[in-house]
Structures are given as structure tokens and as C-alpha cells.
Amino acid sequence: MSNDILVRYRAVISAIGAAAEAASRPADAVTLVAVSKTHDAPAIRPVIEAGQRVFGENKVQEAKAKWPALRADFPDIELRLIGPLQSNKAGEAVALFDVIESVDREKIARELGKEMAKQGRRPRLYVQVNTGEEPQKAGIAPQEAVAFVERCRSEHGLSIEGLMCIPPADENPGPHFALLEKIAAEAGLPKLSMGMSGDYETAIGFGATSVRVGSAIFGERDYG
Ligand SMILES: *Cc1c(COP(=O)(O)O)cnc(C)c1O
Image 1: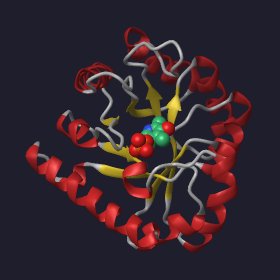
Image 2: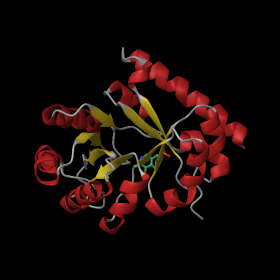
Image 3: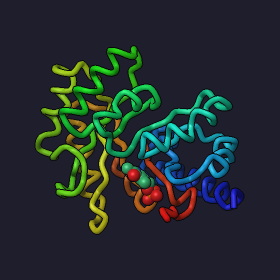
Image 4: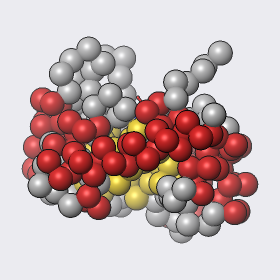
């Protein structure tokens, strides 16, 4: 079981290297965010021991239950929140995460600004863009994203490092990755979080600086 995880982990690392090389980019230009949501510490620990340091979780409560003990053993872990944040959890998110990739509305930007000032802790931040303009999906509309990034800075004192997107499940992801890259360039942002298990190699071709890979490493998630 954990051996399967390590085999898949190494395969993902080498696929990232190959995709970067194919795109004439250095392999270390792409950070692998290992998405460990729904997986418990015994599944995660071998991946840490194999050298992985950057992990993604989509729920504040789940991350809070799992990570403090792992981090006590591995203090150099970087933990990223990649799922929607409720405003009443902003304080916990600022305390726990090193990177929050899901800044997706004014209210969250305001709460994060307040909590960061209060706690004196400044997680790095990404704005999530709803590139497919899907009504059920979180994220800022593409045409509003540049202005939103600017307001994060001017009104909430937040420094935004990059953009994140999750393309529609049933569409070719390439145009969405290209759109995110274009918006980031307009906003002057250096980082692009895009690409998941099914499309991370494509995303690297479009300039992803981090890819969020879950099931290709840990196996299918069991929500039951
Ligand atoms: C779960 C999740 C991922 C990882 O998805 P896989 O298809 O399992 O790689 C990536 N990004 C976000 C925002 C997620 O919620």
C-alpha cells in the first residue's frame, strides 16, 4: 500500500521533470504540491520521508487534525490550503497554513487582512480565478481578477503571489491555463498554481509554477 504510493510518487516526480524539459523549463521551476486530503498520517508519512515537503489540503478542520503531529517531526513542511475558505475560519487558516491558494472574494480578503495583522503571520496568497465561469465553482471571474488583485493590495494590505484555477472537468484544460497565465501577466504576478492529476503535464507546458497532484500519488480518494 505505502509502497504503491511511493512508486506513484516517484513516477509523478519524473513526469514533472519530463514535462518541464519538453517545455524547455528547468525541473525546479515547478513545485509539486502533494494533495493529501482524505488520506491519513500513515499514508502521508512515507511520502514525507521520501523527501516531499509541500502538501495541499482542502479543509481547515481536516488539516488541523492531521498536520500538527506530522509537522512536529518534520518542521520544514510547507502546508497549502487549496479549498474554499469560510470567513469564520480565516483565523485558523492564517495560523495553520503557509500558503492560501483560495482567496476568492472580497470578504475573505478582508478577514485574511485582519487576521494577518492580528497574528503577525503572513501566509503567501493566491487568488483563485473561475476561468470557466462555472456558477457552482469558487473563484473570481476572469474579467474582474486584475482589479481584485489590486484591491487586495490597496484595501486589505495583502500581497498576492499568484493565481490558481481549476478548469471545468469536461473541457480541454489548455485554454484555461493560457487564460490564467495571461491574467497573471496583466496583474504582474509571478506564480501560477494549475494542473491536477489528469492534466499537470499540460499545465507545465502552459507555465505552471506549481501543480496540485492528489490521486496520481495517493490513489483514488474514498469519501465513504
Ligand atoms: C483535490 C484537489 C486537487 C487534486 O486532485 P487530483 O485530481 O486528485 O490530483 C487539486 N486541486 C484542488 C483545488 C483540489 O481540491
